[in-house]
Length: 78
Image (cartoon, rainbow, N blue to C red; front, side, top):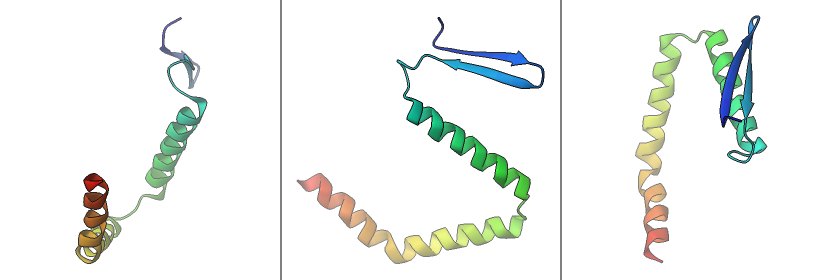
């Protein structure tokens, strides 16, 4: 058996994965991510909302960067 295979059956794809290579939990997370991306595309967010998201990220990093990175640096020191 191949590690991964994809077959087209009508309007569906059948994916076969060798579970000795990847856990079912990992596959579930992968498909949850795909589902999330599908929902985001369906939502058809405006560019303005994407800009607001970028501003929120920048603001968070300005406020929390030092504290966040300090924790990472502390962990590396031990």
